[in-house]
Image (tube, rainbow, N blue to C red):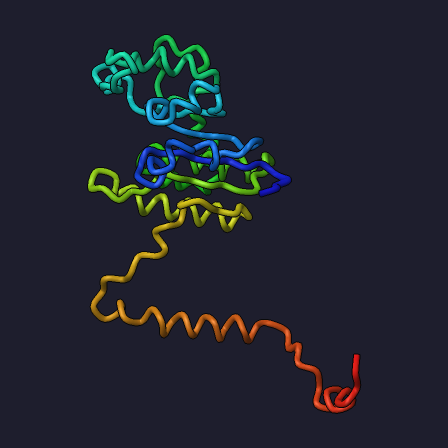
Amino acid sequence: MSLKGRHVVILGMGATALRKADYIEQVCPDGCEVWSLNNAYAFFPNLAKAKRFTRFFELHEFGYLKTWKAGENERGEPIDHFRTLDSLGCPVYVTQPLPMVRNQVQYPYGDVFESSGGLLYTLGSPTLMLALAVHEHKTGQTIERIDSYGIDTMDERHRQQRAPWAVWTHSALWSGITMGGTSMAYVSEIDQDEGMKNLGPYVSEILREHQAAKKPNTTPPADATASTQGVST
């Protein structure tokens, strides 16, 4: 894939990313920006060791993080989350100041709020990551494509994040950014409303006819067709 503009890959830790963990580099091509969050360094150690993360996001409150367990390292020892964030070699976006993270950057809530028209509808870190990308695109740091993997919002704990994630993926599309990966997997869900769920094929046909009607008529006029009959080319 050859892109002229910025290419951002947002990596979460849902199933659609973890299934690719052993070859995650293949969805993070050279030249792309890799944005990830929380303790994803433990799920994608190859990216962490190669200093491949471009930006990292740890947006939870400090009080929560003081007792939160980030997992264990290869030796079975508890991971020092703050020291590991510091070792990634990239900016780490935070909500509140964190200890030992020298390259931390305050998340620009105010700027993102203003560029979103005064409605910052976000739940969870992934929507804030996507909102920042859209903000940068709107303010001159043009992004051509965003792929995401692992922002699945399928489990009960993260399901409420699906609605704002959908809002921001569509905001990106309307801003001219191509969305790829599994970022818009939710559009394949079947309507569960009893009176609506069987209308999918019918509505799809309406949309196909609508698109066909918008295309220019390329059929040559009857006289032009007749004039070429019997002529070899």
